[in-house]
Picture 1 (tube, one colour):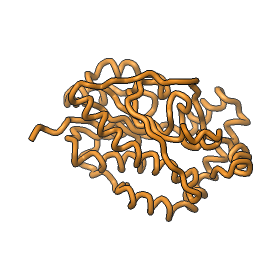
Picture 2 (cartoon, rainbow, N blue to C red; picture 1 turned 90 degrees about the horizontal axis):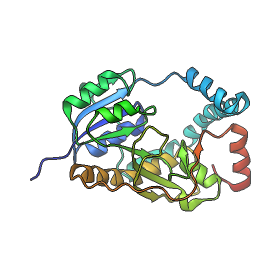
Picture 3 (spheres, rainbow, N blue to C red; picture 1 turned 120 degrees about the horizontal axis):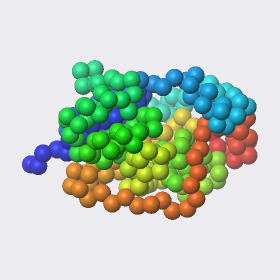
Picture 4 (cartoon, helix red, strand yellow; picture 1 turned 30 degrees about the vertical axis):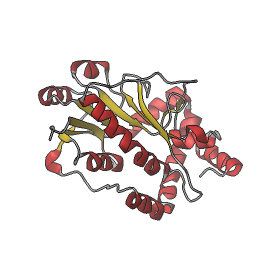
Length: 256
């Protein structure tokens, strides 16, 4: 039996990171799990306010708070989907985790260079630096919850539905560069949304679709046959909806 491909997981804390770890650990040799500290929410809000304006940022913050109610309402559906797709959000064993202040820090570079994985799975980190990508001799591969390049940024599945663009409601597995979801596309697939789904369940459906694509990409990386493709069509980066924008779309199109 050939050795299992050696991979590292470079991620932010959260249920999708846990699910990614558990989905990959039986088929791949995970030589490191590196989890970065969550960036400051206050700094993020200040950055958004400078980039998008105070009113838009206030609306996004209001929606983030409201989305917790959506998550609570969708709890039973989320649990059902997790069971249906064999996903586990159980914590990753502490003795396998290295925690760092930033995914771009020197500790991350040293560890990845020392362990020399054949690929680095990226999940929920800040934007990775050119320096990190250049210094580690392995492809960095990310799961994006949207179809790129049309739905870069966050909540790509929701935005496709909000734009009445179900054909582009899905996921992308792509190489990481220093841009926002701009790396070469490896695999894409779409999801099917049911009436009982909402903002909180779209990521579960997307992750379930993405995991087989990520596994295929990691096998490609191990066998040095990655074949990234450029995206087709217009490119746009999306952010959180505002609370009033969310309700406008919900009344107009029934997108929850």
